[in-house]
Image 1: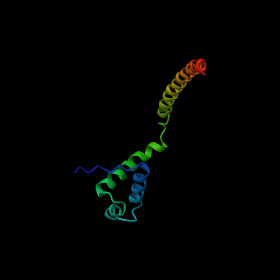
Image 2: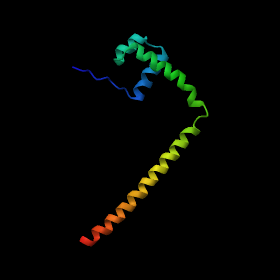
Image 3: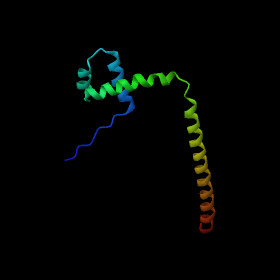
Image 4: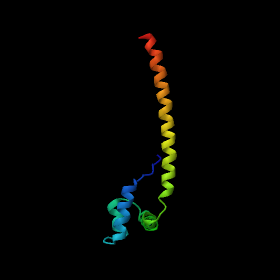
Length: 96
């Protein structure tokens, strides 16, 4: 019987990593409490510490470019759907 891997959401990972950074409990205690492997907690803690500098960095411009591209694609889809809707309304209007 194949066992599927659990996938944890980012909020859970951040919570566990923050608890590990606080240092109020040992990694083993956290692993038991959150039911994850201690090495996984070490990994999440390291990722949080390494990624924390990015929060305060000036690399937020790159995200804006991706958002603009996504917005352009969505507006294109909206336009296409509007054209199709208008076409179908006119076509169905003959039968009603």
